[in-house]
Length: 176
Image (cartoon, rainbow, N blue to C red; front, side, top):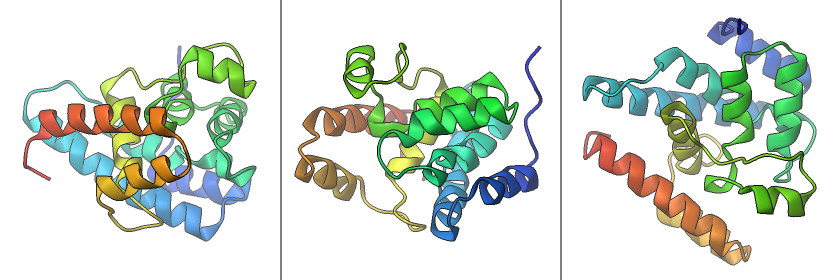
């Protein structure tokens, strides 16, 4: 049996307790707000989506930034979440939100534990999508995110982010 989801206040407290900066916490709150709005639109359109999981997963998606601000924050965050006894569904959101997804080959090149770090469930995809549309705490155009990835010579990540953006945008239409 999986552990229960923490309440919103408990998730925010966990971010504080692990040492996340106020900027990271504000970012996580903004991502959570957008992710929840996106999930509600999907739900209203008849898609099966766990709204609470989206909210809590989005709040905790960057918990690994308490240790590092590199791409490795996804794996570190997963480890923190597992050690905190969070449900596997939240761990998966944390581990799979970066770069529109990290393949098993890319993960091996990064020295990550064996696995695929690509968003699979609708909840994972919504959190990753929302993360790419929030800067520190404000919405940013997808073009800004894509341009930044390309400037950092992360063309494959930019392609993955574009595909994810297109997929979720198609699901929600013009409702956001």
